[in-house]
Image 1 (spheres, rainbow over the protein chains, first blue to last red):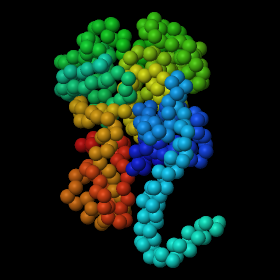
Image 2: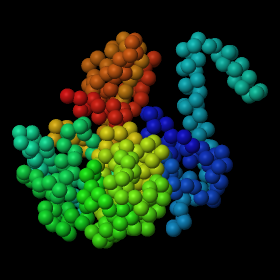
Image 3: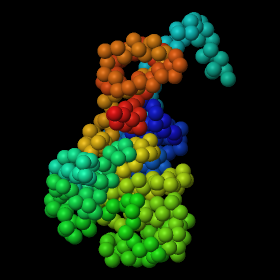
Length: 122
Length: 282
């Protein structure tokens, strides 16, 4: 996972999303341990409070949970939960932006559709 | 909550006012950045806090007790600074040993471990260390001293990129596992901007900013793009400063972003270093 320090997106949100990506892609399996606050903050050279804030988003959403004395673990059902949330955001975060850019470039609806088909065929 | 409280501290050197009625608090278990231009008064302030020089007026309280000539209070504070007060011919490993007699929580074993990591030869005398290794030696002492308050004045002076990276990692690891208050005074702002939680900016002996890094940086944003577009966008807004490069321009704006940004402008967040430069340019 990469953190873009110049992005307008807050670092703690990037941390949360990075772990989410890891869970969706299977790097962090359900019921397996995720990196600790210390590991994350040392790795990215960020204040542990920032890392904690990111992980707390995942805790609040029931994506990870704390095992006392052991660390943070991916909750059962986390993948389905994340996929559902991401699907709901797909239109806002990808489709709208795609159409905006397409309009800028004067691409027609047909042209975009054929591009999407081409993408799927690949 | 335990803290170091600096109350109405003023210090003059002849006709120069180095520290001008400063009031500030450093809470336990937090990492602060103390930022200021050359001659802004950072080191003077740190020297006053640690009783190395005396203020003309005002007082420093450590966990509620007046620090001046108070050994018990001063034992809670460690200052790593350019000047060392060890005999120059002393070997590094002997300094480790002696430091423990003044600071009982000093971890000799940990210091040895860090020396290995930085490849510092502890059989060398302090005076024979290069600039970089002199900094490394002082850093190791500061990271091993285990006082509730540690002040680091230019901790990475003369360190190469690899050793700076190692230092920040060790600092974060140390802090994460065993929190204490670290106050880092540095000119390498970009490197510490994500490490520090609160930022204190000092200018001409006065504190001009003292708040959490996140809240300071969230007060503004940067727009860049075509100069004419940027100029029309920033008209009437609170501008900290601008940079121009030919037909391109960046403007640092204080205020909240509007949701409908004109097309062709790029938005990014304020970065601490740019903000610092704009705030402290006189």
